[in-house]
Length: 352
Image (cartoon, rainbow, N blue to C red; front, side, top):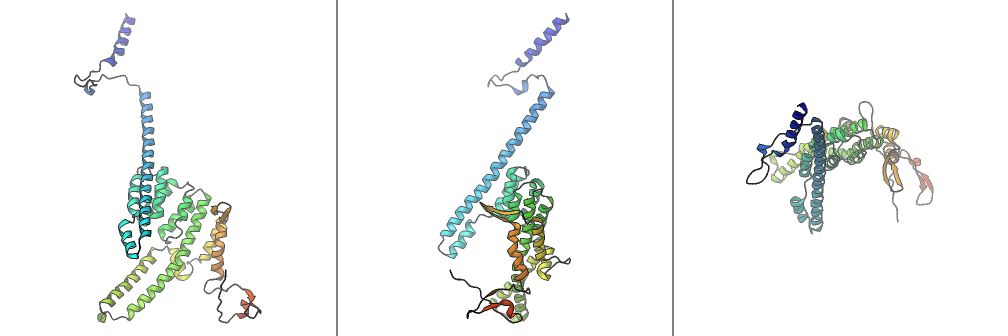
């Protein structure tokens, strides 16, 4: 009797799958009349895991396509702009083409960030973040820098990103980004190039600071000497430009890191750090790191710093010039040191 009951149960279970009803009109399964089937927990978990993996792979592929498509769109737009700009016959036409056709990187960066935020740890996100850091300034670039360090600090590609910042203003944000690469990257070349770039930012900004400071002092002197009550409209516009020049210098000064500003204004920081000591530290810690490599031409950070250190030590204002020897116009031997204490004009020239 028990065998008969078990047999009947098996027959009923086997027949459950055939009781689903179809819609009379469409011939399709009616979702409201489906017969429940047996539930196997382990099989369901495996299916869910497989679905999640497939979704992640699909999201990654979509992200890659989106980032690549946006960057390609910018490259195409920029190439078209450049072709039209170079073909323009006069400066007025060039300016008009620039106003109308120049592709604004910020607009593309916003679109990239919308894609990147879906999965900032993906390889395509790294490509998009690097694009933003290298082409955009301000909060957008700072945010991209933070995401790069958070998700891609171990990438060797961070060396190229660090190098791309060598000509930027030595602001607190830029210097902090480079310092984080030095502190947190496990890649020695990334550390070295970040350290080198940090000092190059400060050195490069020095000349700009001196120029802007000189212009600001001249502008202030002209403003002090003017009588605004008696100036005509043209003079008033000139005074407005002078005030804008002063304001621009203030904005630039406020953007600088404390180290950069101290070196620019006083030649050194409170603890005695100078441009020369900064370069010395880079050479001591990362002098053997490869900076550039093109075929057999390999340049290390130490080699690249040699000329800069020579200039800082011997060719800067207030330094003792290196001695030179040669023949004068009469064929007599002489040394530069023979004229120490006198005003000397040296004219270097060549003929090829």
